[in-house]
Length: 529
Image (cartoon, rainbow, N blue to C red; front, side):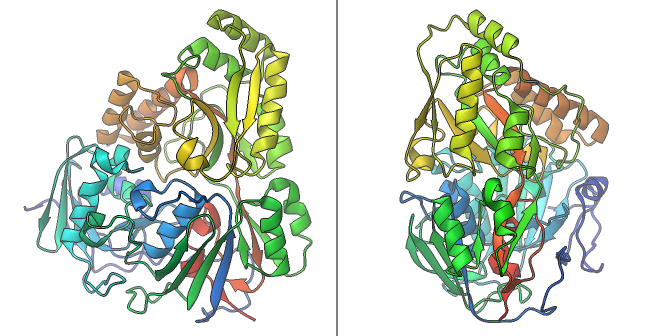
């Protein structure tokens, strides 16, 4: 196909492009790889990366049922596994710039309905086989298939057709979407040989590290991919993930030097860790949020009065103070905050109101039987304590909330997205379209509230194709209001990502995309001493 309206920008200096700039040039796009280097807020001991050594990370949030299939990655550990062994078409930097990865450049038609991704030459999978446009196409096709049960299904459903044209993969959309390249950064969309159709859980990717062993819920080990294409990443000889779901044990591991990095630090112990010798506590705000999710299609949560009763019965400010202890901000029952482009803060904050909670509970006609909320302590730091606070405030409104503590192991495969009321967390996504498409579109596999609203779906599709930012912002506001008023998500707080990091680890940068440098600590840091 021809794109007469595009202009070649490949000769420009290595730089990223913000979403605002991206939208401004949506009809003339060909991006080169972003430099992606950002200074750490703290001085480093070594300014140039040191090669070698083994990075050991203590990670919470994994289980014995975890899969190596990128489509099924659903928790903190599988997120890190995919980021370590995989390579996406594009990535998004900490400051919101688009960074080319397996795609060397991107072009768009003027109407943002046809997108072309030029596939980088000379990149190898861990097997030594070359990464080809056919592999990319097969990967995108597999994640578009409902049978794959991919967490990326929601963002793939606006695609009408895809094809290979020489070194390019061409994506034709049913409606315009100026954010499409950002959607391709989703961590499920790691490019696999033949798209993973032959062996989706083989663990073979094109990332900086090659999988050596995998014991789900216990340990993962990786070695450096010797033919990795990007010499600015992957400084370690080896990487090891030790799964430690117990928070106390995880913090003990990093304090004793058993691991160099521990994720999911509970805010209540963060202050103590700052005084530990040889350790730093890193925190960064972003789009992550802790939630309680109700299935809108399952009794008693199919009654909006009951959903509103629970929303009014939760004391958000108390949770921010007692659970986050300053490492986060208050939420307002929709998944978007000021970290997102086109955020509108005009929706009034839902306040803790026992009278309104009781009023809506009575209006719901609920029979007074226990309303069971399932939670495990590894869901998010302080999850059990947060649930206990929720139970206490709900009781004050006459709502019989019962907390059922369940095992950590298997939570993300047997409880989340299956049980009608449970605790969860979202790391957020780079743009609003991706967040809503992944978790709130009626047909999304990860619609964990079973919120199915045709009017909301129509608004989402119209926002994708709206290139006028003021109109698009207004549509997103209407969508947020709908979720706030009718949705099944109770969002009391947006969390900081908090990690404990050995002083031996250098090159750390603040990236609020997801925890532990948006999963890139193994790629961008190095070991000293």
